Amino acid sequence: MKRAFNLISIGRKGEMEQDSNNLRMPLGDHIDQLVAQMTSSWSQKGSRRDFLMRFGKVTLALVGSAVANSLPTDRRVASADHGSGCTDWKWCYMSGKPCACCGGSNTSCPYSGCVKTGISWTGCCIEPGGCGKIIDYQDCCASGPEYCPSVSCSCLCHNAGTQDWWCTGGTEMNYRCTLARVIGSCPC
Image (tube, rainbow, N blue to C red; front, side, top):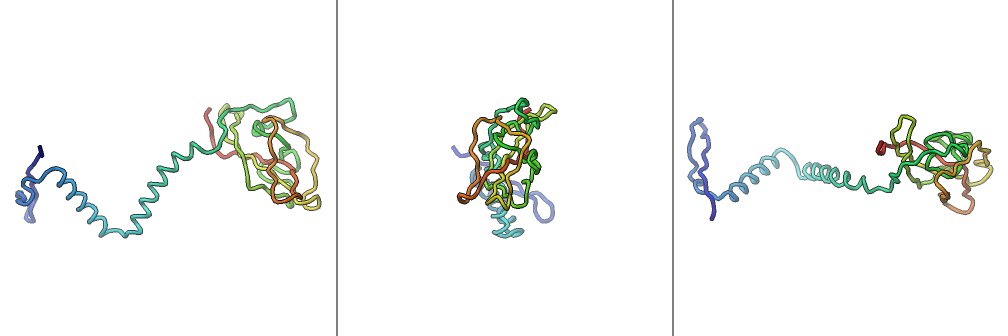
């Protein structure tokens, strides 16, 4: 059974009048008409390109928030192994030589001839305040000893067990050290 209702509108002079065309219109038709009026009104104010831009932003925001949780981040919380000389909490998920111990810093390679790899991995470490931080690890590599000499490092970390070195691009690419930079928060 279809439901019908009376549509009352306000005329140009402000008096209320019944719309004879919509006197017994089903609810579904009324919704269709309302949507048609809204889209018609909106189309006069914006272009198709504007609509696609707004629709794309909303869609990416919805999809992006769902995809962010599935990114390859090890969310297990590790603590730094202070017995091996790795005293910085950012190195809790590292296996190798921290660049900060080798003449560089946690965010830059030790020499200008050293290059960052295009590949990185992440882990969650506990900072001194007790909250977890997501750390992005990236290897610094050398194309030859003259461009990035082998450095003597004051510490060697084995906190994450055996890890691959990510120096790619030919046989001359040699591992020098690993960068560790904070990129976000993980559960406290």
